[in-house]
Image (cartoon, rainbow, N blue to C red; front, side, top):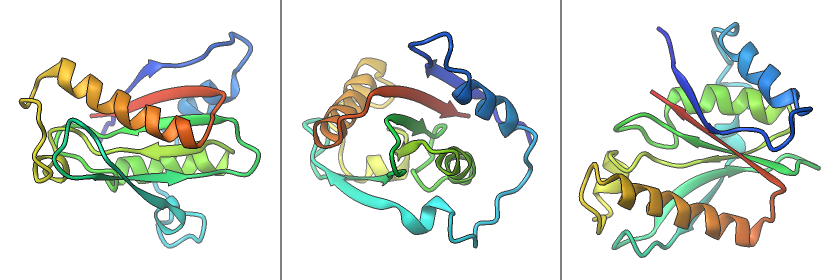
Length: 153
């Protein structure tokens, strides 16, 4: 099974090769031990965020790494939640390499649809505002230096 990674926002510095090297190494690893005490599912801080784009608060998963200044925002493919296996696997690898991880559900997922979004499905402007709102709230509480956005499909 191939997972296509779309990097929407990557580096602010050309000399930052660590993130690039982690992403290139991702496809070489076939499995992550989900029972590992380091697996991000077991250490995630589940944050409930209010959004003007949803009638009810939404849960996102945040994993903080000691001394990390970068935040990797992970978005699953259509219908995926923050607990999507691809996000858990890649998120675990990135977290083990010292990155803070924020996993959010896809706006087309059952997690978001049941929260009664105020934007129409497949409205890309509405979805972008949805993500922007979540990211701004997280950054207000945790001032990260750099942001990296990854989507899986």
